[in-house]
Image (cartoon, rainbow, N blue to C red; front, side):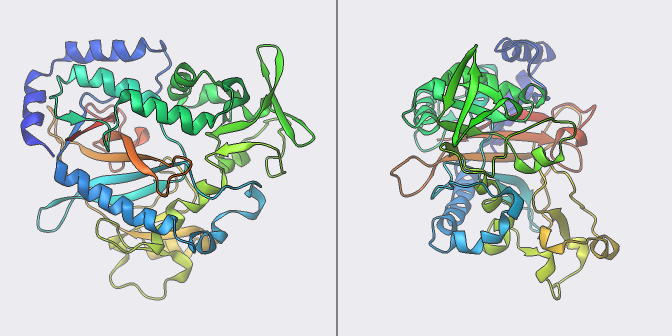
Length: 396
């Protein structure tokens, strides 16, 4: 990380500045932000950025390979497979922990990946406001590969709308007004002009889908999907919901099947620097070393649910569906972010977009998260400061 900028930021930090910063973010949509915004961004050197990008390109080599769909065919639960899957995921994200090796080196370690959207819209505004708040030097940017705010928005519009009129494109989730990511939904509406629709409000007529657009029944031709099918299954007293596993004349971005294909399920197929070795639990015959060196993760959980950090044999013995679990080698998060009340750990999530006609997706933007708990995430950082969501700025 960039130590000089860290020292400068910390020296100039005041609680009054932070409160004003939060007010500016809240003014986007008052009262909507439902997660903690950290006091500081993350400043990333060229070398560290390139290490993350190199790891991502290796993963993308696998995703674009002819055998990828074959090796991930069992990743999609049979009762959740949605017809109409396209050839590639338009949206990808890769989460890297900022970690420390045995010799003290600071390196990225891949901890998660998603063939699923992230906070693509909110991060535009967060990055812009944070750059001013942090008095960011001219040679740092939250964008990658030469993208700027304007070119990023243009790309986002092209990918999500895909040439359709905005009234025929919706953002879909389950009870969106209850989601912690709802600020991103509102920002998406601001940028693209599309409506956010709850899955319970979809109307099916034959193979066509509709929604109530301010009193007008309107055809849906493309769905910007923020709905996790497994989350939908867990809902109780939800009422009648159309069966999305039926075939409808609609485009998806990203198609729900890609949530399963590009996920923790992909990790065991990767063998590269900055990617911890990972095994399907049901395929392990003998480990090289003890369980204390691994983390046990359910394949299809989200937000850190179900993860067991201090693994014991009885944890493994208790699992009835080992094919739905992985063992991933532990990584050591570095206490890398200096703060007034002790160091924080950090993760950086890189956003990749895959534009129609291009051979590969490209890295475009990011989010970052700070933690002082045993894991990244709100539930592990209650009553702590200098933790929460933020953005990384990359040395250019």
